[in-house]
Length: 511
Image 1 (cartoon, rainbow, N blue to C red):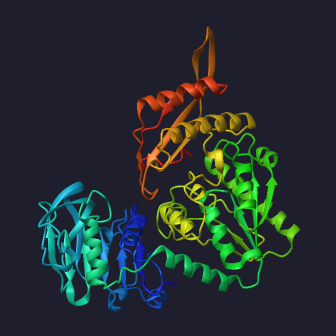
Image 2 (tube, one colour):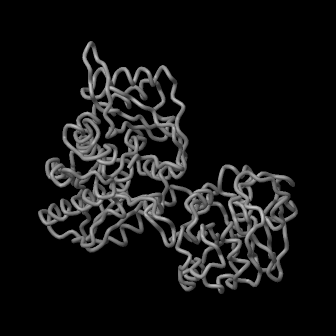
Image 3 (cartoon, rainbow, N blue to C red):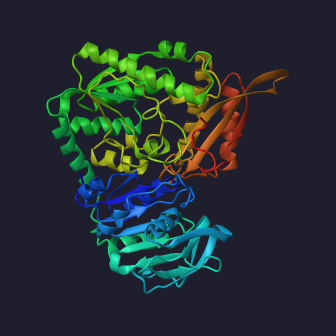
């Protein structure tokens, strides 16, 4: 456990992971925990500060998320955000009511720049509001330190008790000086040293894994993607040959990827490597299945079963390693958070797993942090900056049922897309890009003949943390070249579309 940390208590807000991301950008380690985390657990962790997230509930509703009121008596600085601000007031004797004017979007607020929270923040600044309720009356000992035209209490503080609250969201980019506010809370109010770095995280993690695993055997679920590869090398650094990496080729990988993964892990890393060719097994299980969640569950189930079978062949195995990362955990539901979708590494696991325990060494890292960890571990840049690939593979990039023929079509289309992106020198500038085989067929003309073939959708996004994303504005000539090549070189495709939807409202993957 890190010596210095901040806890983000989750009350179901959509931006909870983003708050954690912003805190880490200030070089302060933090973790997101459910709002009902026992007070004793909080005391045990001894955080330098606590942040309450926003949330969709009405704070005065009967089943509204809450926390132990005694948390305000620990002497630990607390920052309440939106719902978290309202909850703080209600628990401490203030009053929350329905706002006469609902505020949503960019709002100008006037701040008291003498308050520590707003140190070096402009007297008038823009913030992102999102609330239908607001604070009507302050609890005893609090004072207003910011307001807007329609929100008389946009921020408040009780300096004596180190309690602070804001009605807006400082963590989003739409609050331009929000990072400054969070930095003030962390450094000026919580007195954090801002000394957390990835090299220290890797060193501490490797030491912790070595102590935890001891002389036991470990089985790693290796997909060849960035996450599982970094997890595998981290475990290898900790316990060496006690680790066996099992790479399951489920027939849903990108073109040539199975051979590439085998080549890298058998020539560049000193690990026990086993490749299992289980393509037909997965195709049989997925036959006729169209629902994306069902696909994920089936693939998760089969993965575990394959690992169990391989584990029995190599002897007693105590631990299973997976490359689960923080966005997987949060999107699959944490505490009272809404479940966006289950992830193969999280929600797709069956109830019964024949291992002592599952180890997820990257479960607290965001994607860009995983890459930094990979570089710290000495993994080649080519692998570290490989395009992200979901555990279920192409199964969730093929809309509808899965067949070997559809997989082959998508592999070829995706290969051309990635090749052209690399040729254009954009492969490191785009957060993620891939092709999707839709379930849509349409009429086309090739030569003098009528066709009735598939539509391929192209997806490319720019993102820093994979929690929010914007579509990449690819050059038209590049898109034209990609479209021309796919339609001419890949059989059974006669139409190409480019997805220009951000996240939110869409997710990065189609399914």
